Length: 291
Image (cartoon, rainbow, N blue to C red):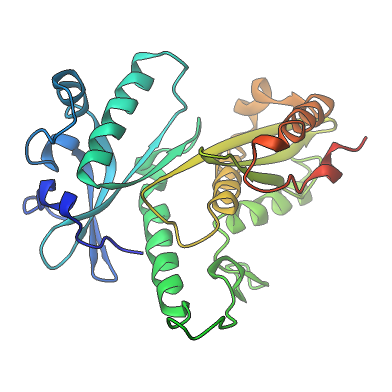
């Protein structure tokens, strides 16, 4: 799951200054680094305009090998950029440079999640998931070896119940039940769906029925650029959308203007289902389209 030391890696500059934000499994995470700090000169195939724009862009976190500071992957958690906006053009140029130098990137697009609040937890999660996937991978030529996927491991949750300990949305689900008991929500269950677009991102939705017939909906897109999360990226996108719902529900007064009609949400899900030819896998949530 980790970088293989390809020829492109020679363009990457080790990080040797500043204190890491955290250390985990032989890797260290640095916060808020510009691309100019990671790349040693303009790589072949990158225009001057692409280069001058890209090097001003940054990442929320850069994960390096603890032994030598070599960048392994970078993470950004950003609001979705509007089509044709300067932010979208800058992102394309940054992506082109990262591809040219072989830098792995995990990009999370969410209107609610932020790198400062959620970046470290997401990175620690994928480091653990990648390590687990490596440790449980079958030996070459050894055939399939049964193992429980990282996301499906059962254990004790923070509230004492048994459940999926690697569900990032577990705390939000527990908080929703507590809010329902306190009569702050119309429904205690956080629902969701996930898909993966062909040659595109994974996408996850999550929603809570805050008032009867009125829902708070969060959507997250997750891009794996030369990167593997160690888990199904679509399920991870849904879990992150659930985390975003949980964050919004901490201030119920502030979400009133964000609520959508349950019927509108159902129409949106039907529209998503109508695009199943654009998905990597079949749409598995037709039951949510029913009246």
